[in-house]
Length: 74
Image (cartoon, rainbow, N blue to C red):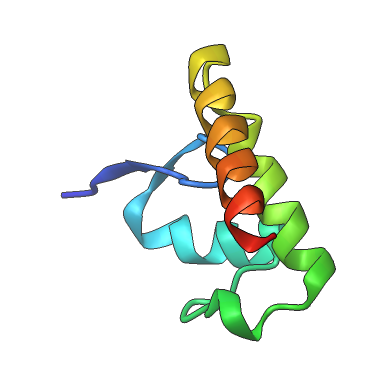
């Protein structure tokens, strides 16, 4: 029996057996994608895709955490 799953990047609903192909073709994510191997622009695109899926409260929390992380770097 097929299992329906949600794409973590875009939120689309797919059959589990097709999810890796969807992610590879639509989002440029390999089956064993490692974010540390991705280029700077691909990392930025992935972060923005995920950020845009958050609620306004979630986005605010991320902004606060990033601001706090920047302060710790100074």
